[in-house]
Image (cartoon, rainbow, N blue to C red):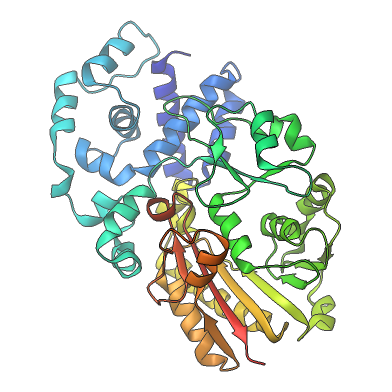
Length: 429
């Protein structure tokens, strides 16, 4: 397919998303099924266009003064893919599958508009009702933080130190420009490709099949590291999901001690079975039912809560979720977070540690929830996570403190990671 056909396809997928309000992968899959002539490069380019549009949908629409799918795709090509109005016109000239786009003169006027004159939420490319929440989280830097969430995300890998060292994995990887992560000691980063190019298929590498690494954002790696699991300890991963942080902690524990991996939705644990086998992990026990947790009460050295949340910190990877988020969604997640904090706290032994993590940047899910937890549970006290950052991550870099002064708030602009909140408490002896 030439560019014109890819533009038309991306516009069709965006129209489908608008009409049917469903996840991007579903819409892309259905388009691919009904257009089997499209090659893998075409599908990657169309996917990139759709996701790039959604990352900056609000500002695209304001600048081009039109929110029709075709206009949004055109705006993305100019603002994110590096086309000039004349270059785009030349590329589409003679392409019989190309839709009719605005003239180079009209597009030049669009490029010349000043986004600084737009309303704040348009400049930030976030839902209008979230602006005050971003300001509360990030202060005067809120706009840059929001805009950074509209960039493409890199591919991050965590080296499985039970089987390999980072330099060995770097030598084995075929991914272009792979390099060490900035903070995570076992992380590798593959930069996000530009334009139509596909991200490296790391899970097709032989090294992945050997269990040498897992796909995991650097922020998630840091959250597992800061939890501080040590060899020989008893650890409960209370919201284990697919097991990314479970596996990371197992490596930190050098396969000794015991990690009890539990999730209220037992089906989410299923992928972990293969991951544990591939990674050579022997100190993880899957707990399928809440009733099976009873013997662990008051006995855990550490309990990790990777809490259900709105996922605002992952908007680079899931930009469609940004525009579906509602205040009702947020309220529901806050209730879930209070419940999971109280339920998980009973498993921490005196002197033990409770770590609370979200992939959100909203204070309501982060600092407000931890403050409410401490008010309800006087038997716990906050630990300054900045000290953990200095000890385990980077003593030379100022810790990315959250607004409460004790937790940490990671973000694309601050730490070049997804958005993560991390806070930790000790149960009084």
